[in-house]
Image (cartoon, rainbow, N blue to C red; front, side, top):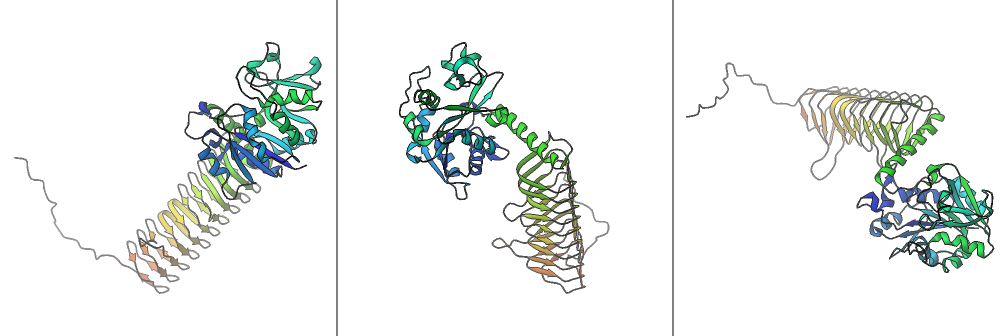
Length: 467
């Protein structure tokens, strides 16, 4: 049977104390609701219906943006009269032929295999609930089973405010996630009322309707609390962030990655590591990152959307961000410390980029070096070029970008300005302090600076004494 996912994302999230809607708060660099949709996509869901409300004008553009992982339809819950009322808003968007999986937009780390098992338990004819035992179940709906035994059939979910003292002692709780045949769900939603302590329409009341109708109610109980952890406050968000990052770190170390301290590691995207990669503390990885065999990453680096080839060393405090164009660092290259590689930087093997050097939209061939205090933008740099301290390519004329070509074996002295478009011929030398505005011949020495003048016995101006 096809699977349709319903995501509840209408809540105010008052405890977050933020103008940003709760479901747009970020975990590992990704909005909470996007984590949920990414998981739904792994189920090969036919569609997703997201119930919005508070902050809908901010939430819906993300959900409906081009490139979303699956087809999304938004429905609004206004006013907000409970979880059952929320799902009622999704009914017109749901077919009768599928299984509906109901998820929460603030529960980001449920795994796809867990949901697949829940769907299998549903089987197209049962109501399946995802449950877990909590030592402190305060605030959660309790799973009430018949006959008093843990193995007995589920009879009801009782919300905290409606639970008796005996029911509040139950440790098994409802996670907020269920799988249910769409046709049955629609009928049960039509029977909801708000005769309870909160005056709301509870989605959990569908359990008692299923029991009354003779439909089996089954529970898929898990033990991994992270998969059902919801986020209601900045403290909970930070706690879940660290727990998630530590889990990612352990997973990568099991594959061979060496982390100096897994508690000081942040992955906010995807990372692909070959053997014997070493990463020091407090590094952040974003987007798509590929690390070749034997790569070493120093402390306090931020690295996004790049490919670093085997044997390269990224010294501490380096910032690499390829954005859409990407960055490539060649085999055996040495980068940093305090270097910045921007989109379009393509560095060959054994390139050296030193402290306070910025490279943007430029290629550097094998063995080229820019060791300190320099800028290379929109440049093509040949093999074995030595690019001096304080030198820059002036690539922007105020309206358009222009390219600088530095051919093989060129030596650029310190504090030079290469005004693009310009080509420095192979084997040439540019004297320190020169401003080059015209292309140079191969092998030439080019010097373009004011003539030095020295005036002997010159006296500086003196301040006049105060009257």
